[in-house]
Amino acid sequence: MTNLIPWRSLLFLPANNQKFIDKAHTRGADGYILDLEDSIPPDHKTTARANIVTAAKVVAKDGADTLVRINSGLRLAIRDLEAVIDPQVCAIVIPKVSSAGHVQLIAETIEELEHEKQMPPGYTRLIAQIEHVDVMSKLDEIANSSSRLVAMTMGTEDLSLSIGMEPITEALVGPCQQLIMACRRANIIPMGFPASIADFSDTDKFQVVAELANKIGFSGAPCVHPMQVKILNQVFMPSEQQVKQANDIIQSFQQQYEQGTGATNFANKMIDLPVVKRAENLLKRLNR
Image (cartoon, rainbow, N blue to C red; front, side, top):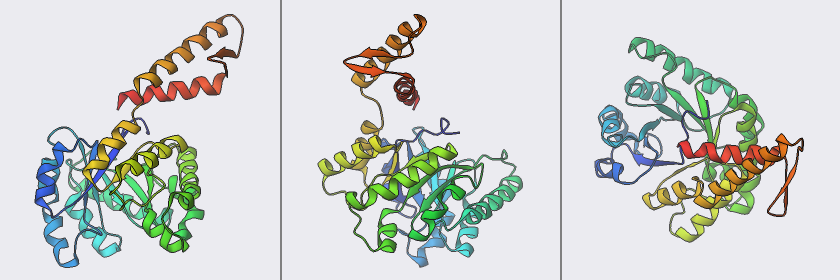
């Protein structure tokens, strides 16, 4: 499942901001999340919801994926799903996920809507957004809750508020690693970075945070500003030097393995099977 949708960058767009929607295809993101939740005032949600399918066609015209973040309240979420489940929308982002049952309820609703709209079963994928300390003990249950679930990410601002801490990297690395490990156990994609998603003023600082996110195991991240997209795309795509080194490691190991040796020396480092697997996983990311 994780190889099907290897997003490096997912750019949030307010679903009622036509200017942002029209320019989206120039931003270079792998996907765009049309937001019906936090960025839309209550009295604008009906109009924004009604325009989703048209907006999805616009943002995807250069081949990017279109996702939609629905509202967290069940009554609004159902209205959102009835309007946005469509072949133009490949995935739904569920905010403020509270349990595995929460994800399953959304998945069952989508199944009914896909059937009504004569869409292929299982077409619409899910991303679970973790935003409260109470949910951290349920990460494994949520990660395994539905075959539609392809990724989990963390709402760092809300999570930090619920813990009583500032959304700073030093405090967020631990919770992020818990989410990453739950995703790996369930074979779904961990997305995010250990910092406030709202802080986009310092690109050098964001570059450092994105590189750390890559090193600790994230595969990509959502973002809220176009200038973050280029950084995420670069960080979550292996460099030419990394690709060369990975190929050299694999070749060296294979040569030694054929001679009956299970470990070898490469660039003054011991190379054994886990190192080779890491190199192979890096090369798989070239297929984004």
